[in-house]
Amino acid sequence: MSLITENAVCPALEVQGIGKRFGGFWAVKDIDLVIKQGERRAILGPNGAGKTSLFNVLTGDLSASSGQVRMHGEDISRYPMDKRIRRGLRRTYQHAHLFDGLSVRDTLFLAVAALRGGWRQVWPVSQRDARVQQAEALAELAGLSDAIHRGVAELSHGQRRQLEIGIALAGEPRVLLLDEPAAGLSPAERPKLRELLTSLPNHITVVLIEHDMNIALQTSDFVTVLYNGEWLADGTPDEIVLDDNVRRVYLGGRDGD
Amino acid sequence: MKAGFLALPLIALPFVLNDFWLTQIATRALILGITALSLSFLATYLGVVSFAQITLAGIAGYTIAYFGPNTVGVGIKLPFWVSIPAALLFSVTAGALIGYIARRSRGIYAIMITLAIGVAFFYFTRQNYAVFNGWTGFSGITAPVVAGTSLRDPSTLYFLSLATAAIAVVLVSLFARAPLGLAIQAVRDAPSRVMALGIPVTTPVVAAFAFSGLIAGGGGILNVWYQERISSFSVGLGPIIDVLIIAVIGGLRHPLGAFLGAIVFVLLDTFAVDLIDRDRFNTLIGMVLLIIVMVAPNGLQQLAADAVAKLRAKEHQSGKSARIKTNT
Image 1: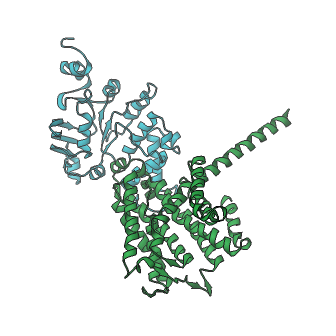
Image 2: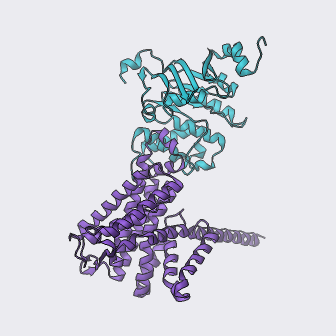
Image 3: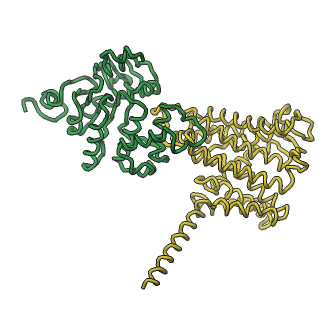
């Protein structure tokens, strides 16, 4: 990526006509999005709106049936998942599949080593290794410093969510896609997550799928609402709350409420 | 300190045991333990039960037989410092190849693939005369002589096997903590998540199998020196199942489990005939193994570790109550 392209005011993520079809069913259909660098964007929509499918297509977990994805001006539509990750596109998963047999530190170390290289090394690394230090810094960023030596299997649900975010922050993420990070968290764990989300560095663009309206609206600059796999509305959090279409399909309100 | 407690009696064994106990029991258990360790490594860290470990050991063994002195007139005689690395190279390469073939298989499918490879290799060795000398295989294989001492000499072979076993255990624990070892464990826990990190799943799987080929190859070389022969029977279903039994009864959680399992198996295999009718000794072995699996579902190593932990807790408790008594 040349500096010229980087410096041009191109969006962090530009999605044109993206669609994903399973047989005759379009899970996501003809979505256009332009997300600016450093923006906090929430993607809302009821169950089955196509939010996670959209993420899967953006990251390359699923191949797109139509459309194009550009990240910082570069067309990544045909890139395999690992190449997109190396370009700085990261995500967390709705259902945290983590490495239950590893410790928090080893998990974060592996995430760092996967991007910085050296994961093929066949002898143990020293504690002073730069990658180990980075893993420890990530644990601190994700609020897991106290649990760094614990096994992943021993973590609470909230801590697993934090670890997911820690993994996604490894290397130098430029665009971070968070898939329902607050799902299943206790009321006590939610403020901690909100704090973590708001403390993310400004140069990272964050796209968030979230059912918790408080978290979604408080942590985002702009909101896109999907319904039945299609675009329904765009706007600032305040506009979205007042949007009649959105209230009807998502917030449970009726026309004229 | 802990390793010293374990090592000292093992080093002293040749001075207290006669040749029968040293060779037939201790050395044989170490050699079988090394091969079983290659299986328990894969099971523990990759989560794959491989039935092809005897094949990997056999490939190393056949290499030593083919490129070393034997009495069947097949093969090319090479110095041992060439044939030993060649044997390990072949077993590692074969391991990598098996890993590549089984790279997408887990659970029962991995078992089926590795079993198919094991059985195919068995039949291949029976039918191929040019390299494997058919079902009769190789006999009269002699171990190298170093500084005037044959490596087949009972004490020498014992120490060699002990050293190989110790190196294998150290290698396994080092490799498990290395980045590639962590990637292997990550593949065991969540392969799709490993891909999402940007690590291709095939490399850790192939590396795990190749590493298990190195360990199994070490066992295979020692075994062919110990037996002084190798044939299709050495790589058949019998030895394949023996190694699985050893790994399971010993326990898969710790590398030492394989050696505990091997000792129990060798004792049973050697003495069951003396205890019961020749026709029935397999029944006795089966019964004992069944009891072990029922009493210690996580293997003998775990049973021993639990017992030690219990004992320590008891000591701690009695120490505490003694302190309370003196205080009052």
